[in-house]
Image (spheres, rainbow, N blue to C red):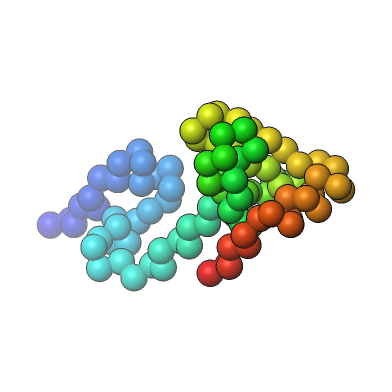
Length: 94
């Protein structure tokens, strides 16, 4: 009697997973998750004075996004970046 191969789903074919690779004993390494934006520090919101995180944009410009008052402030000038750096508490990278 001829041994039949198990039917593969369209999802398995899309990602080219073989049925024998899709088991719980799969020893593949899990992907390392990284945040979308890098947090560089913590400072007070200039509008409402709540503590907010300072993030870097794709172009390495600092900005804050206050969830309390919905203010989104970008620091583009040299002087504004210097003032932000002076009042910001730096967060250590892990």
